[in-house]
Image 1 (tube, rainbow, N blue to C red):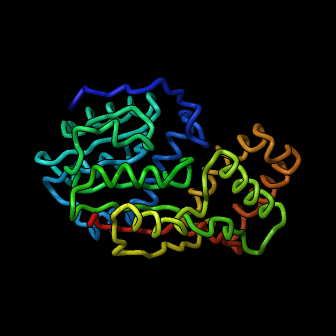
Image 2: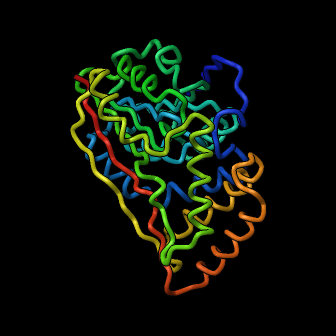
Length: 285
């Protein structure tokens, strides 16, 4: 495995990511990947990611998707993991080492500076993957512009992200739940993110030399007996306290929310309409 982790700027693990980079969040991301891995693999197959290719995992986090991609591209391929959390990149290194994968590179830096971070790869990248990254960055168009410099003509970007995020709801509807969903949206936006980013992506991609060839939605419904129920459950436990700490939600509202959520978790009759996750594939012209 390459030990050349490029430290291009001084970055704080807690500065960048709205959900933080704690051990608890790392575990949550692992669960999230398992629950969404089928849709990720289907997207990668549709995007033509294959053995021998060089792929960027944009905002790789602890590297759960990167490990799968490294196995797909094989020993003749390469996965370049880019993230601005040093602790997450350390976990990438540990995962790759434990799986004996020597085709994984780690680059420390802001994904909005991809062209600088990977200047030697201009026009040589076969594919790039970004999942729940563009909704958090302040300038997603800059990320697309940087990818346009790196992805070769005919290469692809595969994106999974949100649109209509705040349609997420509990059924039957509860005011306590709706209030927290609205606070989540405000929390994203106040940090410079956009929980409806996919609505803007086709124009961004077209403007920077990509053609959108696939656009679809993964709309999932969860019941307490379903494995996917653990996705929102783990999110609330990590993020609601952060909403209180940031002032987007008061403690009383958080307590009332968790009381409602506990009731829902114990019920046979409720379900949750999960936030719509869109698949986007675009080809570099």
